[in-house]
Image (tube, rainbow, N blue to C red):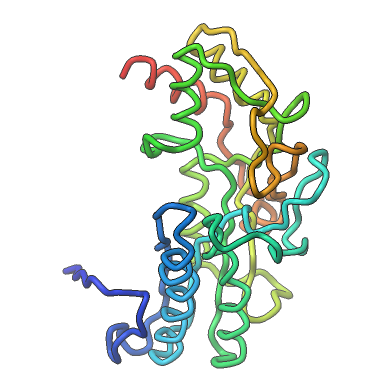
Amino acid sequence: MPVGFQQVDLTKPLPAGIIPKDTDVLVHLAAYRGASSDVTGHFRGTAAATLNLCEAARRAGVRRVVLASSTSVYEPALPASRTLQEEDRRIHARPLADAFAKKWAEDAARLQALLAEPQSMLWILRPGLVVGPGMRSGSWVRSTIRRILAGEPYPLTGERGHHLGLVALDDAIEGFIHAIGAEPPPYTEKPGPIWNLVSEVWWERDVITALAEAVGVEPRFVPPATTDPVGWSEQPLSIAGDGGRWIRESGGKRTRPIRPLLEALARAERGA
């Protein structure tokens, strides 16, 4: 079957007909990647773009929208010893400049989809830290490996750092495939399910240690030198979403182990 591509500006209302009528599924993965200080860019390129796309989907009669999110959507004020549930409080206080505009917009997008087109469904997937081949060079994992290889000390908040939710890239992809084609779980509230795509929960210190061991380096930890505006260097926080609902409602799948993926990434970065 032939495949066509169209380039559109999501920061503006989409022209009529850009989405074929009665499309079954629309998958939204776009987000603004500019500097965190670019408040206008983040609002237009993520928050407004999400709403523009959902409005175009409503006009076209799209039956299902699958929206890529992140566990960063949750309020970063929970103790690091616990994991985040889908029902936990969403972000309210974070400034838009901190690159969370897409997450900030999603509850508004869900509400709009519900009110404007009750028969449609908006399925939101919130991956944690995705680990696997093809990660960007500037990703946290790969840039951290380079710091370890260079012998730089790692700034750790508290004894163990933040609580992180990790998921294998292949598992995250399968989560999206499931959301695209599967029936919604029983008792799902409109406009659709929300899943945290997280398979394992790690302390930040353990991630750094595993990466360092994979390249034969002794990790060095130091307290953070500065206080960031979001409060990540003031106390260890939980950004580890609980993936129990996703695993249970997608058929009880067995997820891929994270440690071998971290070790493979570290060895590949060392050999680059």
